[in-house]
Image (cartoon, rainbow, N blue to C red; front, top):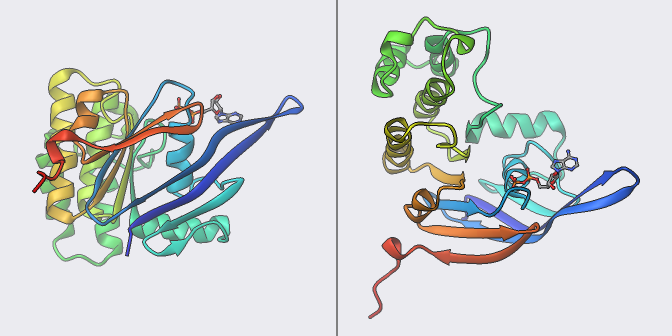
Length: 233
Ligand code: ADP
């Protein structure tokens, strides 16, 4: 069964009395543990597509199945429940709970699952992303890159079926960027998490198995990346 299936997805916004179609008939299908990059110029619909796939918003027409669940017919609350169970996020503006410390942000999902030794595990995960010394900081006291790494530690705690990342290396210096990318692929290998990355970074896109290029909301190209291509017989 595919982990994410997007079928003929179209999104139209009504703005200033006219309609703006920002996604047109986008289709693709991913299997568990696939790694997938969405690239394209600003305004091409990448973030909109990511939000629809993650159930943050609803398409104008077309369908999204996440882990076998069709999102289109669900209520907002039902979609939130699906997200909580199956999805992780590394988003610029949608990530940590501001009233919880870095440690608590990682700890809460572990405790909710009733995991034994949750506090120790949460601290070990923060250590893994290089932030053990920031455990008691609140998100507002952390830099953007540090917040992203806490989000990654939380994703390691949750082991989501699919992780959606919007420009995961966008504002990071090269060293932090490489660290975040390595951790993303570690999560993919260790937990079988499917990675769906929106990025401007073509080197990062080339490290995934497959890249989809959008332009003006339509799929311009969808191809296997060379490093992952199957050798011909
Ligand atoms: P990208 O991530 O590729 O930069 P977006 O998905 O953010 O592109 O945006 C695609 C287009 O949709 C842009 O033209 C943007 O202005 C428009 N758009 C995004 N959200 C809304 C909205 N809520 N209302 C109207 N237009 C929107």
